[in-house]
Length: 266
Image 1 (tube, rainbow, N blue to C red):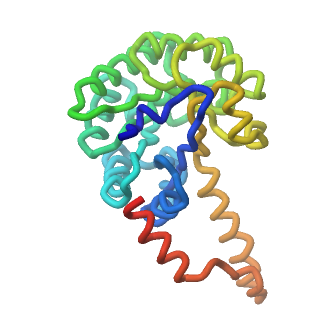
Image 2: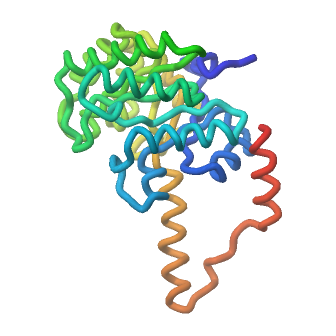
Image 3: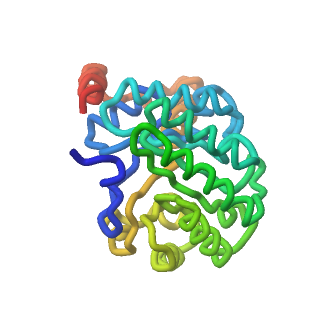
């Protein structure tokens, strides 16, 4: 049996489909997703709040709901571990594993985008890794260097942090929005662990084959798919409220029903 960890093959990436509810998770599974992941922003949208406004208990309960309703592995976007201390990260990983998640990401920035100090960030990942190794089932820990995305440090610092995270026990490394494809290649070549790439911004123009050529192990989309559905709500809904119903065409209800049923067992 192929495990979630087994899917992470540098140069042969899989798409980690970020979803926001059971329906979207089952549809992705029905279409062949090998694993799904929560999206902190995507889920926050369903609760009517901005990203970072969801707490640990609600985020993990959301992940557990997906685990109970799809047969593919579920990965958790668990922000900064819901607290500044290493113990906060360890508790988050422990609770995520108990909820049945196959892995999670831990960021090195707080909710306002300010980065934790480099040593503190590595200590947080070390505590999370110890918790992951202590889980009853295999748990894949992804460490994120988010400071480049937030404009708080440069790529050199991100690479230094990713190396430290690997040394601290992270299984997968991730620097969202590093810049160009060449920047992503530089990350892959600088670290000795599977790398996650985020297919947004300049990297959204790359194909899966392009990511493979760069040596990436997995490709996620964050809240991009959720934002795409919200674009439809805004555009078609706005036209509808103005009296134009032409944008409301969608796939047949029966097709949706079939995919939801298939996704439960995929």
